[in-house]
Image (cartoon, rainbow, N blue to C red; front, side, top):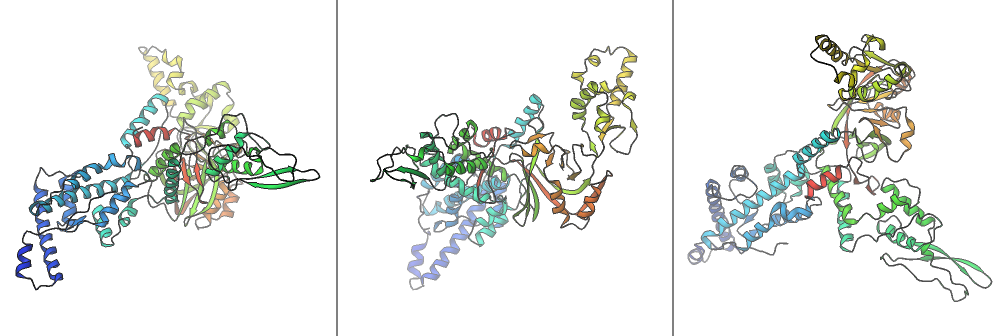
Length: 630
């Protein structure tokens, strides 16, 4: 915190005012002081902005001039009494920003400002100039912070360069679009000052993602937990499950209490007496990392039982299942290697993960929509939000790591019933052609036709009419690589082969069509969409990254029904009738629905539960190095 309280401004001729106008009241004197201060401030600011040697911290003199022109060249953050309260609020907000906090001193160079304040020239002839330079620094800090709120802090060019290398090395094509929020920062500052509330400006550009503020609160809780020593660590063991009796169970109880998965640390104790066996409930409120070695005893008992807190009972099982659900693990209540690793993930690592995901929320559009679809890739979930409430949620299958689902925002504009699958060239080359070469009947078995273009009504060709082998990727077609290109006939044949590659493979609507019976379209440069799938078994898996980039829906009819309820362009009952047939039908939506494809590995859900997920595409490890220079 800043310890400096600047002294009141002393005017050059204050003594003459006092002698000549001794009978004037204090209010008039203050008005004269204020007017003189403003005049001198205005003149000083103009002169400093003209001087090329004036240091401006993060902004150019041209940008600074824009600010002060709007404020009539008056000081913004300071006055004749020193630094204003709103400037103090600026410092406090920035220093406690949940994303930038670990780097805040380095980012904003507060030490330079503090040094400037410490060496403030308080001589009357230099005081206003010194204050103006401090005001310039504060404007620069404000402007820089607003930029980070609106666009994020990460080195985006560095991220793009990293994923380009990933594409070149592993042939993984990453699609990620960042939405920079550009608003008039000067206008927002004026509004904030008029209302004496900087949040007016900050909230206009900061994230609007559901429960983002709750994630901020969780970060504060975790900071306190880290200061208190963090989580207790579980020792090594093979498996803990209901019925297990081990000292490790006692530690597990303490760990589950720390994350609020175990609400009450109670266990049932059986006490043997001479003539009677009785049950009693033991309560343990200890949450430290020491084992509770106490023995349970009773003055009437002649047998003393071991500590029941070492027993893995139903209460502990429910706590483990709660933890597993909040971490995307199989919720079976059994602590194996995977669950133990998740329980032993440090508070510090979780804090980095939480901050990183808040940063990602600053890359998203701020107007998500009154009604919108949210696809969270690492969670394998789709939700429909309506008026900030979850109206629908379902399991989904997303792209494999080799074919990651892209991250961007768009609008669902139409729905296709009984779709034809236009098989992408990459899949044709790498997967379809090899299967056809092994089984010439493969295309007929799957209902796949060869067309001259992407129109499913265009002319078709029989397999024996084309050179199917010529469509293999060059590196896989050894015969083509060995061709002598000096032979004119061979060159002509090569040109024919290149033409043949332009043929399109389209699968007709059926219950085996990978697109299922419907797809929800939001035309984009990645050629991905939401669609049905005949492979229902995958929706029951915990990890569901199996597609080539598109998003498969577990319950597409529910989404179709939810959309139809508020769009009079189609009737759900009529749509269901169409789905019993094989004719394709496209339905334009009167009310296009925003869809946001996001990559969140930590967030707070609609029930207030803090969630964590695995970094399935390894973006966390890439971005945290760029965000925090790790």
